[in-house]
Length: 197
Image (cartoon, rainbow, N blue to C red):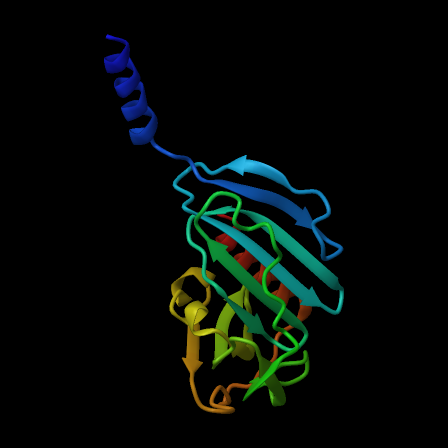
């Protein structure tokens, strides 16, 4: 009888649903000094680490996510890298910092005045991109370097048009109107909202 109960309990233990556990933190100084553990809910199936480097400083986010893309994006004034994994507490490290390793690719980027600056891509950024959209009544264009995995999820960024291309400087075009600080913040908030879901 004891053997039957033991086998039954072992079966329950091995067949019970497993909830993913990820490290969670948010830091505005670039490093997560204190990380807590969280159980993922609402269909979250991945752990993520997101690192953003900009003129205003570095930010790091770690946590559970429903859809995570591994890669990086560079618009010249800001760079973002994400790392995704799907085992317990696998997001202990920050997103890979391959921002400073040039890969030979060049794309156009915007600086607040125009979108004709030439940007040297780094790390896994194997495509050029051009986002076109509107924020309120204002149209904007954001250009730069991007990883293919981000191009494959283009519908999530709440933008009118996303164009990714593979050749050097392939993201130029007739509409090189730049973006303002407000449209840049709108774009970043839309992207972070998607990643933090």
